[in-house]
Length: 295
Image (tube, rainbow, N blue to C red; front, side, top):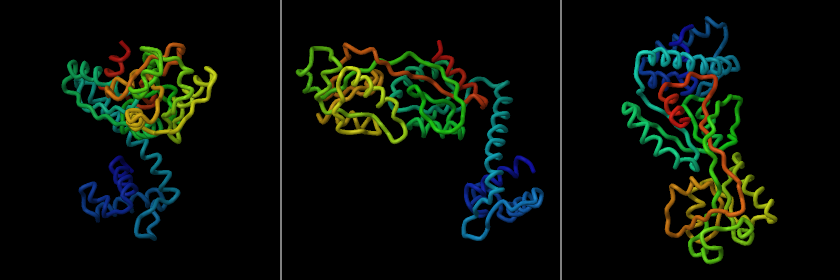
């Protein structure tokens, strides 16, 4: 069995049929069928259940799929590593970022592009769980996220912590007269309708804000839990409620309907970091990008 056959097998597993896999691989169907039979004969097992309209992996096939995925990723990374010994910094840098960290990227990308003009970017947004899955699949090279990083799976992440981010109050502009000019105290949020950033799986920021409110002697009157920063900003702009966000989040939103106020009596901070897998080869583009954040 060789790398080419493993690629064929993975294509059949992903497409659920030889005809579709052949189309994706841009080869004829009969040679692909022969390769599959040869693999099964060599291994002495049946890799696919052929009883339905769609091929399904047998237990033996599923185990091979799990192993093949890692082997192919390792092979690709080895080829990439060897090529980069003689090449400059070029290619595609794939970055995943939570929405609340997006505003940190543009200034760094601008500088990076000046230094390495042959590098292009692919940027993907998602929550911790979505980005963690993409990182394990090698769809992205690194992640910019809030800390601690909440993700499933057994992958080990290296983390470069970045400067912490203070929390600020985000209120509808017409509410400004309710509070002291230019700032707000935490307990002044006790009686306002509160909007919280929370998903089914990522609750870290929500819990940190709730804990800080309780330490100031009140339980926030939460009227909505939202999975999106943009949704909360739209609701605040409409005068529906207020929220507490890391200050850098608001760098991407300059709406006249919204007022951002520093919080005078809290030192709560939001951790930020760059994460990548410890067990994979990190492309030169990603290494240079991380180094730029570190300096």
